[in-house]
Every structure is written in C-alpha cells, then in structure tokens.
Image (cartoon, rainbow, N blue to C red; front, side, top):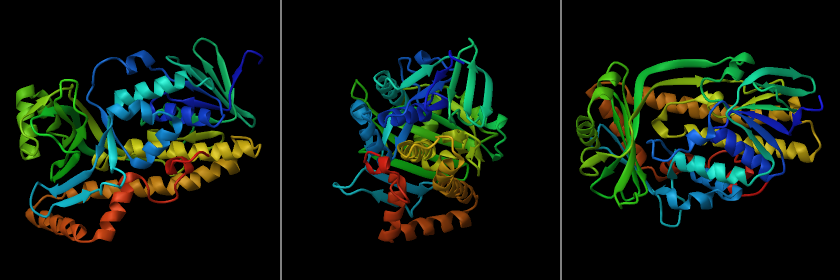
Length: 409
C-alpha cells in the first residue's frame, strides 16, 4: 500500500462543481484528488460554445472569497432586472434591483468559468488532477475509500465525493435511489448578437409549448450586444427546430422575443438536449457524498441548476472544514448527516418549485393563461413577495453557509 496516493477527500468528477469544491477545500487547508475521464484541454478549447450560466449573487461572494471573482470580472454581465410574462401578454412582472443592491445574478460563459477554475487550481498545490483517466476499481470499507485507476494508480481518502453529473455511474453503483421523469420537452440553447442593447435585463416569456429566456451577456470584442437564449419546445417539435437553417432559426427567435432586442444573429453553435427531472432524497451513504447534478437535476426554467450544485459545495466545504478542525474522520456518518440535513430539504424545495412552475405555465388555453397573468400581476403589486423572490434568485434565502455570506470558514 506504500504506492497509494492519499488525500483528505477524493472527488469523482472534474466539472464546474467538482473543481469548485476542490478549490474551496484547498482554500481551507484540505487536500483532494480529482478523477475524470474528460480531457481538461478539450473543456477549455478556444471559442464560445453557447453555454452560459446565471451565477447567483451569493455564489459570486463565494467566488470572491476563493479568488476567482477577479478572474471573471471582465466576463460577467450583471442581471439588474428580470421581466416575466405569459406569452408576452399584459400582466407582466418586473423584478428590478436598486442601484445599491446586489445584482439578481451574473451571466458568465461556462468556458470562462472553466478557465478561471483551471487557473486557480493550477495555483492550488493541495489539488491533484487525474484527467483524463478511468476508474477501474472502487473499494469502500470501514476505514476509507480506495480508487484504482486504469494505469494501476491507487488513490485513497476517508471520503469519496461524487460530482459526476446527471448520469453518474458511481451514484448508481452505490445504490442511491433516484426519482426521475421526463418533461417530454427539449431545450435549445445558444447565443445571439442583437441590434439593441439589453440594458442588463433578462426576459422570461412563458409559452404553453415551454419557457423562452433571453439572458444578457457582455458585449463581444467587436462591441456587439449579446444575449444567451434558452428555448424550450415540445419533444415532438424539437427535431424540426434543430433542422432549421440559421436564418429560419433566427427568425423564430426574433418572433418569440417579440422584437425586444431587435434583429438577431447567431454567434455560437446551437445545442439541443432533452429535459428531465431527477432527485435523490438521500445524498450520503457509507463514506460517499453526492453533490451537484449527481444529486439533483431540475428544469432550467429558473436558471438554478448550477447554483444548486455550488450551494452544495459551500455547505459541504463548511461541514468538512469544521469536522477537520475537530479532528473528526471526514467520512464519519454523524458528520455527513449534517450535510444531509442542510442540503436535503433545500434541494427538494427548489426542485419541487421549478417542477411546479414548469407544469403551471405549461397548461394550455386562454383561461389558464388569464389566471397566470392575474397571478403575475398580483405579485407585481406585492413588494414583500417580490423581495422574497428576488432574495431566492440571489441565493440569499435560508440557512446560508459562511462562504455564501462572503466569509471565510
């Protein structure tokens, strides 16, 4: 066993959530080893692939503590307002931040997030990357977890953290029960340049066929105004839209946007993927913990998927750092139960809320639309309720980990 490489934790999955977790742990003196079959060079290849994320303000505070907010400063576009409507009809709901208040979120290209994390991890000696590599053996016993890699390397730690995404083989092999269903919808994502400035406003328009969102991005190097789009269509219509040429597809985008941003031009590849829901009520087992999409996968209707995973990161980091300071075994069941209690309910409530919104706004017919518009109008007239929704969007509601409050652990 002398050739076994040891660390405080093992992380299976080197995506945004896995790397953010490794960085947060390293910032507080805990070592990790990340394994992932993906080639890290490919994930940061030049060019915008159309994927972008709305980072909640509380998450941005964590980024500031971890030293990556400065790396992202020139690439983030603050969302100062969100305009919500049912089919673009009257009864619109506006969430607008005061000048002195935090943004509702910050839109960042996923590639820029990956670049910032890669640069920070390169400066973090407590993080070791094993990418690309395959795990060919996994052994969990009373003392810890050992992973055997394809080249024979053995990695060991008291705890294995699974950040492998929606189709997590480690989660499934460990016997976690997953509730899941399909929405029978496809999401089309990408980015456009447009004639009018977005003024840091995000648009969320609900159609019976699915929600349509325009999310502000920073202007490109040529000074063109840009926004990301997330366009949900029914499963049966997805292939037809995917086959449209760029001109026809852009015309459909402009139609759904209601000419809010003027003429549009695609500036990134279009991507299409099926939408589904999955949730694991149990997120810990013997020396194994789930984070991110391995634990929960939700509809993109509220843009909270990545934020949920990064909230997992903040909570788990605090649990493990506190445990290490007390000299506890980081795989101890009582320690991990704190993470289960902390994140289990929040993950469930956000998952159910997004599922409910998806179903509510998907009901066809004029009567349902009138009821929804009346509801949006009622929220518009209730400042306290609007503040509640804005705090949720910022990630500032509930029992916040210290990192999300912008504090060291």
